[in-house]
Amino acid sequence: MKKLISVLVLTAVAFAAQAGTSFKLLSVGDNVDAAALRDYMQEQGGVAVELGGAYAPADPAAALDAIGRAAVADTADDATYAVILYGRFGTDRPQGVCLPAERFAILNLDRLESAGDPAKVGRRAGQEGLRVMSMLLDMPMCPFPLCVLVGYQKTEDLDRMSGNFCPPCHEQFLKTAADKGLELLPAPAAD
Ligand SMILES: [Zn+2]
Image (cartoon, rainbow, N blue to C red; front, side, top):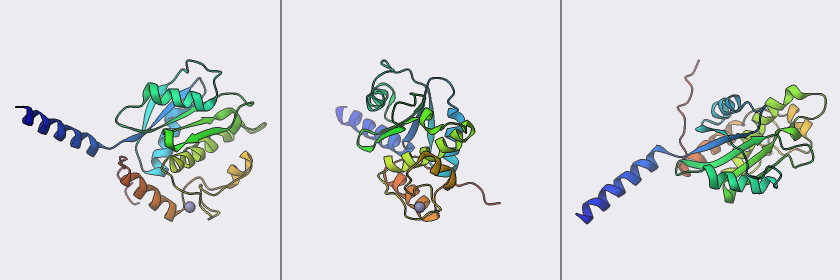
């Protein structure tokens, strides 16, 4: 009987692994269009991004890495590959923190929204979403200028950059995601 139970447990574990993990997107505070960000990251990335809803840090004044760490402890489950938090943490705090070994990234929309051009924050936030997903998969930056993974200096540089992966990076992104057990989405039908 004991052996039978073990077999059943193993079967259940194998089934769960087949379903794949995904990124979990959390929003901290108001004015975060999480659904639009999720759609963009799924469309451009081709991997599953789960909407994790609102997250209220126990200590909103804590350092961003502490908030990210707590969010992983509070919300990650077996189906979570990594947690990505978007929030407004003030212009006096970093633009973001990404710690692949701890499976989270936290992005500060207040820093992405430089003075005079608040409308650009949505595009920049999507670009940063693609960038942190790649970092969480341990992918390197890209030397190709027409790729969202090229290095940049200032926030405004994002507006001159591509909003998506170059073809080799996207191929690498999907391959790495599959290797790490993430759920891939069906490729969109060709026009
Ligand atoms: Zn590239």
